[in-house]
Length: 278
Image 1 (tube, rainbow, N blue to C red):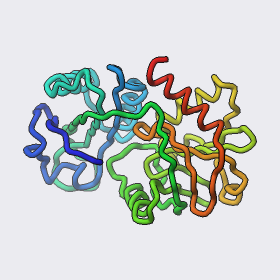
Image 2: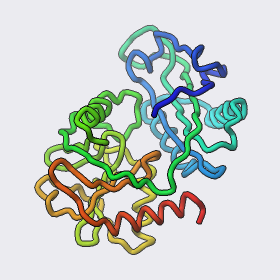
Image 3: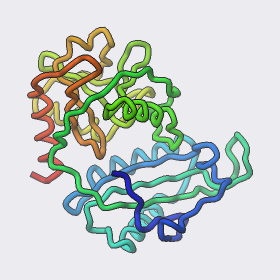
Image 4: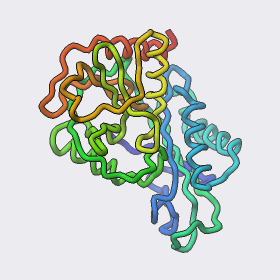
């Protein structure tokens, strides 16, 4: 269940959530002109912290938002210490926008706005929820590798899934399956794992990257090749990956049911061991 944090950091101030406000002229509010990132901490350590931060920094650099990265790290630390969450298992949301300026389509000469908040969160050792998913055309733009705050297409896809009693929508573009609305998707056939390549049509998930590395360590063949719609009936397993999703087995994709999932279970165990330091 979604929840509000107790404290929110905005541009140097730490405020109760009910008092946290932004300007109506913030370009994140007007245009979705910003980048966000989410991390989780378990057992006193951030999972894949540098990979998440590097993705955030790369995204902001690509859209010409520049700021002092050392200052950024210190402000996040200060916020967590203030909220007494610096040692807690939690989820951290961070967002950087182009800042406040009169409304114009081109980039103004403005200072970035930075907001973050954290909530206590416990992730299961292994995500054992059997996921039901549905297919949906991918109507998003062609720069999905950027983790921008302008994710209406993803929101619409997730809402479609929920309203139709599914946990996720799986998107496809020109017959090729890309990713979920807020997850990456993998398929397994004859012991080989398949997932869409990390191009501009998907977000290069941090958990996705770790799963590909685990496949290599476990001698599981993994191909970054998009699965075509016509090949779905041939797939024997499917699973989702994401920061809070971890690795989740797909049991039902519309009318297609997946049976036993030995490869998925093997990867789930290996990922759990990695995250829990075993």
